[in-house]
Length: 157
Image 1 (cartoon, one colour):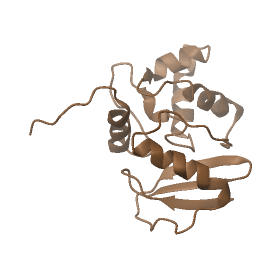
Image 2: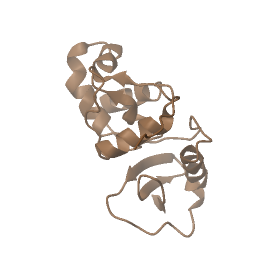
Image 3: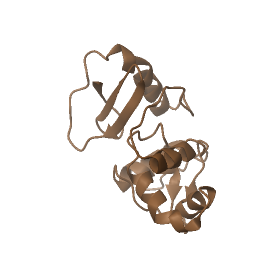
């Protein structure tokens, strides 16, 4: 497993993976110096992530290799289908999985997503439109949703 630290508007990101694909992208709550050299298997992912933050990328074309249970994999695959700039609710996600009773399990799997941004778990919100739960912190979820919003809102004050 190879790793790299990346600077981002969300703080330091830790990117991990190898020739089999990206296994992890997570925001750290501590500052780390960005990696001086990105390992070869991570270079394309690092470039696409930077393009995303610059506003030049709406989707990712990367080999992913997240590690999890079969159910978690099913949830994460469904997250990849949420379009850029759109959101869905935990209930809608559970219904698409075939059983509304799986809402808690789906929400738990969503929270265990090891590849933030690329597997867009931030696009799942509460049925009432609230920003519920985000492993990276709600401020990061809000930032990502605003970054992807087709409507740019100016601050008045």
